[in-house]
Length: 253
Ligand code: NAD
Image 1 (cartoon, rainbow, N blue to C red):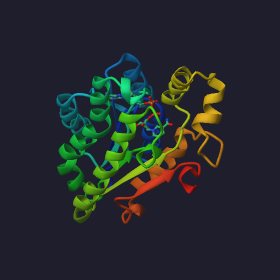
Image 2 (image 1 turned 180 degrees about the horizontal axis):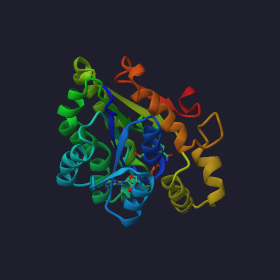
Image 3 (image 1 turned 30 degrees about the horizontal axis):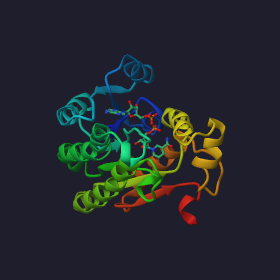
Image 4 (image 1 turned 90 degrees about the vertical axis):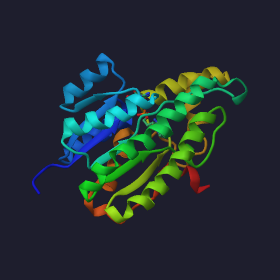
């Protein structure tokens, strides 16, 4: 039909999420971004002609309500990109328990709730797509990232399970696993890593972030969006339950 497909991107006003939202728009979809209700977030959405859904994915009520808001705004839902996330770097022995709870909610429970409540719409699409933005830390660990590594590992399990359940409905579910991408999250992390490890910031990129990478260069958000664009395309109908690395050769060792 001539109707454009519709997409919701969580955490879509910054970094990888914004790059994905803009790429989907370029690909001809109607796109809404979900983010925490901040004036700057609304401003980014407005500037780019993206619909805006205000929700805090660390709470169940907001997460569930966001699906209805997105469907109302877009008139359906064909594509869900679970991208929102954040990092906290601290050893397990002092890792704040409330931070653990909210990281697990935003990066694992919210994707589950969004998939669950968007399910009827994704099925109705006939070629529904869920793309979960995981991380190379869905497959390997790094110290001081217990909640992040745990949530992202869990997201792979959710990806595979949803892929099996969606298969008969033309719904594909895949996970993307990037290594370090130059985004506001990583800019903040450079500072945090420097504090935790007691090294200067310029050392963090070379010796911490790219130590395990074969290609010694940070990815850009558009690199992740380009892979997402293929996974979302009708041509990728046969790819589901896949865990796609974009990892600078990290896991080739
Ligand atoms: P970012 O900080 O630039 O953007 C994250 C977005 O998520 C922000 O818009 C933020 O407001 C939103 N968000 C955070 N908590 C939220 C909440 N409770 N409710 C709603 N929205 C919330 O980060 P980014 O680097 O673009 O990261 C995006 C995703 O990519 C994350 O899941 C991250 O784990 C993953 N990732 C990032 C990298 C990297 O190196 N930057 C690498 C691999 C995976």
